[in-house]
Amino acid sequence: IGKLFQAVTFRDYQYESERFDANVEVPQIVIEDKGEEAEGTEEDSKQLQETIEQVNFDIEEVTDRLIEEFKASAELGESYGSLEIHHETVTDNEQYFTLKLSIYQGAGSGSESYKLYTIDKSSGRQVQIADLFQENSGYADVLSEDIRNQMRAAMAEDEMKAYWVDQTDIPELNWEGIKEDQNFYFDGSGNLVIVFDEYEVAPGYMGAQEFTVERAVFENLLK
Image (cartoon, rainbow, N blue to C red):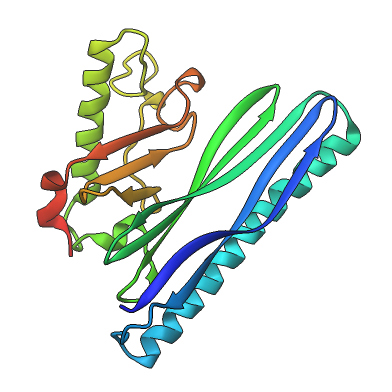
């Protein structure tokens, strides 16, 4: 497509006191021509630019809100608090570019969450997981059951592992399955990696979780 995608640290924020600390990277996605003849129309390029601007705006909005919340807590000086935000490019292939924003908030206990932004290079649009699959393909059920089976296998192998699946005592705790806006990215082999925030599918001591669904499981459901 003749364009190079990059995630760069646009600005940062650091803070340290006896009880509070912050280390924040605020990334932006930038694109530049590689000097090759770009495919696609002027309309495609315009769409891509609009998408990049929207993603960058959302990143700034999310990080600014978290920084302001942290500053307010630090000014009060009560308890303890920490904020860590870092970024990583997890997918950059011919079709997709995905930026992963990792967010850690500590206040007594900690919480780890993620924001992933996936851009389809050919259409220039940001895509959600539902956009990848054929309509009425049942992709959510297929992916969810594969992940549940991985959870069951992990718990059978290690009694210290616990996931919210097959809970009979408190069935409302059971994970309900893939959401339309579920965090995801493609790994280098084209497998789908499903990303969960801390507490989303398991108790807090398990931390945030990722599950890789082999491409063979869902390939025939893709658009």
